[in-house]
Image 1 (tube, rainbow, N blue to C red):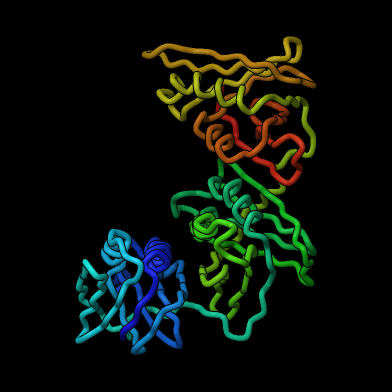
Image 2: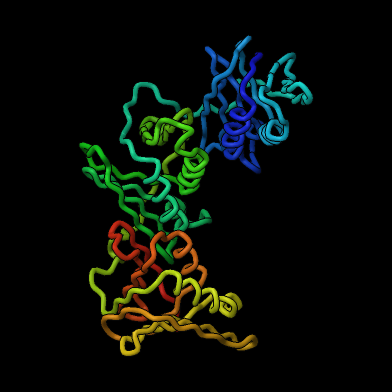
Length: 377
């Protein structure tokens, strides 16, 4: 195998592929990225057995071949060199990557032992969605997925598609996020999928790696590889493949309140500033408990926290309030996560009782809803 390619392109795509490489693989070969040269293209492949990736870049191919190379070290070397062009040569299971002033040699492993990753054969895209919609959906939903594998179904993002409506849902048992986008082309049959949140997060990172002037395609194609229980996302010259999670996602619709006793709206900046003040004490409290009190007479929201061996603090901001006064307790960390990912200037808060879910929305945006379960007062 022998090829030459642009250093900047090679480094960028190699970095994307290397992020998929498992940090603690059960199989040593999963430390590697697979290279395959063919017909003026260099294909790079990596997997951690849950998520896999294929990338194609243009290259001057002098000899075709296939091998696997340690991913992280190769990526760091290519990123570190300053050159317009990079040359790659495989000889006697040693891969040499060189520029006019630098070179490195890497021991390789034969590609026959590399796991097979799902690929598109004759499948048609399940749907097409804009790059911006994917990035928005992932930022507003994925953070609510569970981070441990105690309940595997909660580590995923549920996809619900009906007609031209596509909903992204994630929940970890203490909070829930739901974001809806409209598709330009309706689908024929209703579809429900459960995709690992980390696959969507990686997809969003890939999409944000490319600015609008770098690629012509501003859409992501979704493919369903039913024979392998996998989903494939294609963007430009990148295919991201993920297994689907088996299991029944909780009936989340049952916990979304259909009515509310109290509603208020307030500035996101005011909410963030008060939360920042209160978190100074709240982060010392078990569960980061923060008290939120809504006063319809004064038209204010008061946030406070107290810790016996530390002290207490309080912050007040103005709000438009309709309904009864109420006092609830929430994790300041959960509130911070929501505000970090909620785009908009005004926040709406709806609630019924101190023990029912608190509902947070972006004012004027009906496509997004976030629920947080309250803590005991």
